[in-house]
Image (spheres, rainbow, N blue to C red):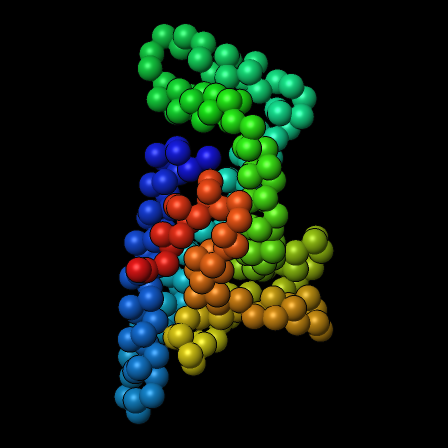
Length: 210
């Protein structure tokens, strides 16, 4: 699915920002041990970390939705019909539709595609749900799955003293579901299981610096 150059570009952008934030995290962590430090860097790091989380969530959400849509086409026997629909004459060259048609055609011709896509959905499920849970708190100030609820401390993060990354609590009222940092997310993507990552890892693995 990452044969799409536009999705690759989105992933690469996230990777570039990851490297920038990793350097900033190290700088802020080192300065945190000094008596005199510029706290504006910490505020900036928190702000950019949240934006990175949002962007990474959207990339995973878009990718997973595309996989689910494709699997549904396979299950209903409408994959070839969708390819033909995308290849219809538009009166101009629609590069996005042509790329999507080529992707689906390759899937149509591969006996392994369905198994690999189902595996990719499985290995990304936990991280995606964690990001989704955090996203609701950061963006809506609510607890995921509880409309009109009030999040405990949306947007508040604490520095991980090992990596310098800002970590956020996944809270549900009086219950804490753990902490999630930006570094946790990037490292989890880098270490997705080997099996089934042929579609996914080659691009998402770029989210962490080499």
